Length: 178
Picture 1: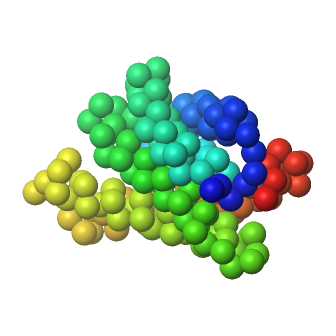
Picture 2: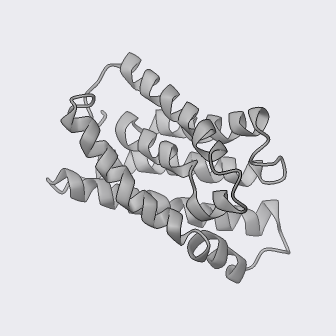
């Protein structure tokens, strides 16, 4: 069923760790103006959770991390929480589902294809929900492109550079097994 072989207890523990990282990691960036939108620190543990634990855990992490962060730290603010919650839920869900479906025979290729697919799908959902629901009438394609790709470019690069390396390091340390 899942790509990486581990017990449900281990999956739950790793997912809980990812949720905790989803609260703590962004908190480290709050002293820098607009750092969350630039470096996307909450995305990393959610995408990682989906990739290594599977889509149900990734989805749960994508919902719980922004919700708990908002309740504990106040970020994201309640105005941005619904769209972020949906976006991160899609990241966790899609990364886990794609990691299960993509089978090139090479783990690194599977990781990058799953990661890139989830990142694109999450950004599309983010844009659509903002345009149709959360900020209807005031959200444009230019705003979406700027927020999802231009401002977020450093975060996108960090995700593509760090997440596959983390998964491979966890596999090498035998914390996860194929």
